[in-house]
Image (cartoon, rainbow, N blue to C red):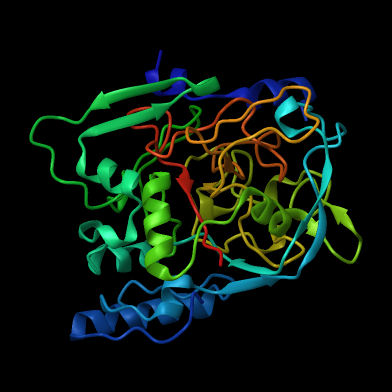
Length: 360
């Protein structure tokens, strides 16, 4: 039995069986002819796929602040409905009860943070500058352990191989990848600078956001941006509405070649599923990559199962490239899967699906 397949939490498979159911804030500056050629190729690709943000892969290490943030969407102040009302086909107590939350205005990234953006952080010395890291995050970065998160708070800590290099990039940073996932087709594929950065711990996401002049969104901010339709005064089950449509996000069953096609495990360049945009215009809020949120995992007031994981665990939101309708609902809270900030996934070779977007 493939150990990767065995360790990955797959509560969504049980549900599906039951229901059978651009970043363009300025032009990159080339320092040489090859770089200029790559920029021209990027411009050409952007003209063909206008829904995707422009690559910033060739930006100089002194990336302009707006490039770090990417395109931001303003979410107006006001109330929205958060959580599950018990009629979404799944009623895990983590998501109950549905309730109103009043938020001030804020901004959130239209897209997940891309590899091109994250490269700017690496090249600017982000992994060598403790100013961007929390005290706990810097200690983790300087350390030599890896934490893998299972279900219900189970954490496996392993020591990195002797002689391992100092941490200076996320897991799965290499351009060419092969992701096993839940056992679908998994050919090798190439991550471009327009793909979401994945394999990041909370600490790494937090450090990038500080460097970029932002922060991680709270869970409430993330969920409002993902689901709330202000005109209808309605919280969608999925960003586009209440009816599941596998072609509107990168998941196990969509056919979009940008995400590898049907039952093929890989991420897609951000913005590749424009018909799945949220009412606020945010892209890829579900599918493609799980996303860290900034606050600690706690139960809602009045939940039938009270819990408070302050100081220990965070939720990730939105599902990823091999999940189905169970996990890619806007209100989904992991079904018992939450992670310590030092984890980027569930096991060795199985940390290729967690990214983030920025807020301020």
